[in-house]
Image (cartoon, rainbow, N blue to C red; front, side):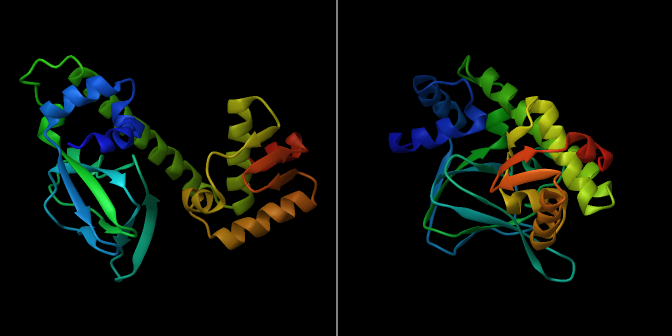
Length: 230
């Protein structure tokens, strides 16, 4: 693999705590496949054969899910150093569960799953670090999904927002905090529409519960905020 792509891979959580020289050695074991795609090209389609996970080396891509009714739903956009297919590739199914499309000229590196989990023939000591990182990634994704399901079960918009903000307060132990996602990402996470969420945030500000600017939030009345938590 061309060394110009190493910085992108080093950004990826799959290679946490693995240095540049170690990564170069590891790549000889993993034998990745680098592919380039013009803008708007379909990288993989829902139902395509699945045997690798992808990491974006250059450019940006969108991940879509097709609903039963035929509507295409944007799940997320990904950029340099971000993965796709990392959960599905280790499931029992052998098909891509979503569509990935280049939204700019795109370069992707595909890592075969068997090269990640199988015993390294070169006795590469960094392979164990890779497997630990992969287990960490899958565990974090599972925890995030579980937490998202908890928020989906909360009935009202205000309760969803209050619970989320209060949990961020408990993590940081400060009433002035920065949300870990932007407004659209938060709406997607809470499974609500962004306009409705923004209106509720404004009402909470008008009632003196919180104040906010972009992703920065200041809790003004923490007791009132707790009343709406579920």
